[in-house]
Image (tube, rainbow, N blue to C red; front, side):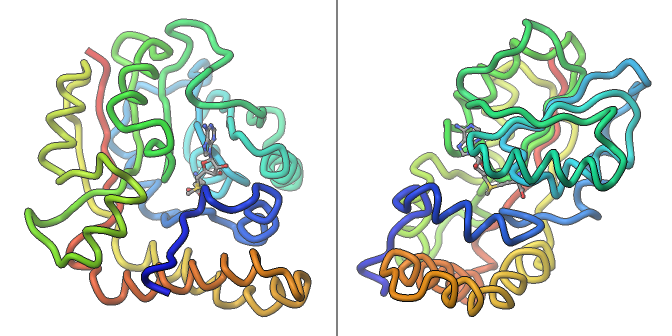
Amino acid sequence: MESEVAFIHDFDSSLICDYFGRLERQGPGSRESTILALSFIDNLSDESEIADFACGTGGQTITIAQNTRGTITGLDIFPKFIEKFNENMNNLGLRNRVKGIVGSMDNLPFRSKQFDVIWSEGAIANIGFQNGLDYWKGFLKNDGYIALTYESWFTDERPAEIEKFWVDAVPAISTVETNISIMKKSGYSFVAAFALPETCWIDTYFSPQKAMQKEFMKDNAGNKAAEALVENMEYEAELYEKYKQYYGYVFYIGKKL
Ligand SMILES: C[S@@+](CC[C@H](N)C(=O)[O-])C[C@H]1O[C@@H](n2cnc3c(N)ncnc32)[C@H](O)[C@@H]1O
């Protein structure tokens, strides 16, 4: 598998939506870590406008909505995720404050300085960390906050196998220190950074996948791409077990200067 490893963006979008749409979260994260990140953000009111870019089906958006006031706009590139997102918000009685729209986080349909907070878990790498920080800043009010998770190295050096995997997937992957300095250069003051604990990977990401993979394969019997996707995700889980001391997602919270 190692030499044939594919990346999530190599798979067909309907297959990705079928697979990840079965999960509450489409990336590592947890209610606790979202709440911890929120604890660094002050001055929110009924009037506040929050954006959640690459919201997926809304796992973290539900937590944000239940722990803030004001309105939230979730944005994701996949219509199927947004359909589920809006269904989830309806079911939880949150639809009056939370809406999901289809769009791309590198071509935003919002006003300049619209938001008090821009949130984004597990997705900024798709448009580049620095590029995303620079572009999104224009949509934040002065003194607005950014809170996002991003793949990061925990050490200055690491074994070749894991180095290759992540450099191929996220070419600009860097250490926490470097990422904080990029954030500052981009025009944010540094508020906080913390690594997502192992439970965010195991309990909300890899274990739920394991539990649904059999059903997914049954529904996609004979589909080679579906088999490859499952193998790919199994390989990612193995790598995490083997090399988790070298990398992870880090929550970065900053305030627009
Ligand atoms: C790893 S998932 C994270 C989803 C969710 N935030 C979570 O943590 O559970 C990455 C998300 O980014 C979305 N995405 C990828 N490229 C995007 C883009 N250019 N604009 C908006 N969403 C994008 C995917 O559809 C997917 O929902």
